[in-house]
Length: 269
Image 1 (cartoon, rainbow, N blue to C red):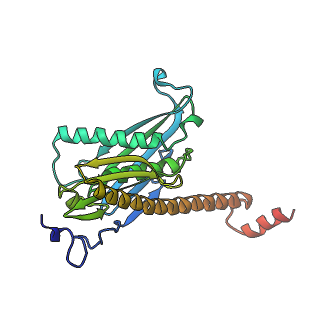
Image 2: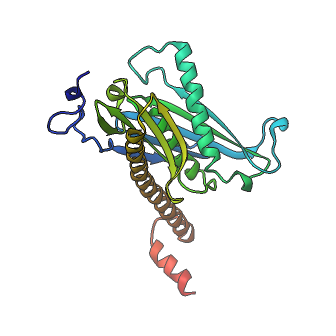
Image 3: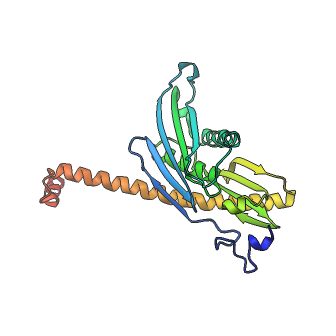
């Protein structure tokens, strides 16, 4: 495709973004009551659901590690997530690749040594795909782990950048990702000097161009991590407010009347 089909003379992409602009981010935590922790994460039109169960006893004793927790991960794409039919062999290979990327990234992030002889199950499903699914899956899984109150070294945030017609582009959507240009997916620990814990590249890049694209992807990760931290703080504050409200109801007798007077009486006493 000609360059103008990706970036207009005014510097705008097909979806109206500038080359170094992220898609709109959305997130919701605690969406599944049956899971220890869960999160719904969206990057543009890509929507991912993650659920975490555990820590719990190891299901197969032969896999038990007395020094650390083991992490099991399962990734899937809903059949309705994309309008195109996927060939099974190619889809299975990609599922295996993304499963390994999620698990390896979380193994470097979760403090598994604090949870010996236990197992943590992480399930990630793509509900809607429009590019960047690998990064969205990692972000959703991290939020779900945090919602499960599992100790981590740091948040892990993931974002990708590509290179099309001599232009570095941040957070490619499906049309851009299908352009055949190089794509660099990164995940970092933002509070450890942006330590890279995942780096995957499709197609070759000259070293100078690679450095530009990598720097752009890391900058995207930092922006994503800031968004994730805000959502986690909001979620924690909402949980604390709900807990405080429940305690006040218990102290007030639960009759819905004169609760403030009852609480004040207990405090004064």
